[in-house]
Length: 293
Image (tube, rainbow, N blue to C red; front, side, top):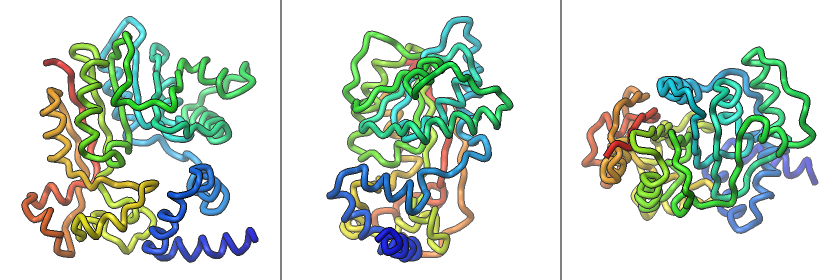
């Protein structure tokens, strides 16, 4: 049976539209089944951390610029399964206290421990051994994991020096982003930082290299609905749209670093023809905003 599943999985990995069908089927099943397949069949959830992510380095750079003598309170929404980014930041900045929010409780103990030891190795740090479980490790790293919790309705008297997100914004419906950023205004200190690292590319192109990184711009909203199952949701937001949302929510942009592809080799759908070419070609961004209004 396992071999049959493995063979079927390989077929899916060779055809992106078959993969969409698989995602739709899995969207009606418990989330843990998708994780089991990704962890044990496709190995997508258990890849080794071999290098330090450029977004991690950007976030740490901006945190270091705060140059605070006190503890720095950090909030993240959309942390994922292994908290690798949070572990890296904790090991790199001793004054950091992190509150990590996720809409669904996705944290996996095995993957988190793997990430911890792999990042220690990359940073040439000796791993701690005075913990018995993942909760104790996170406590030592000053990471508070909060899930399930909706960041758009998160209420606390605590104010944060910085809020971060990585590869999360592109998976949230655009109408919900307004609610999230408006709530973040109340959670971030005056002059506090909002750091957004966003992947604007078609995520199917990550696996299927023959697809353009912006292949999804071909499709109108009706057709895209069928290509966009809820457990692999992509909002197709473009950089200029996100900047407008941030400005509408009274965040001021101070810095942005963009990654673009060279050209388009297809006609985009009518919905995207009013966009400037450079807006369509942008596939990643690192955005530093401030809550100073």
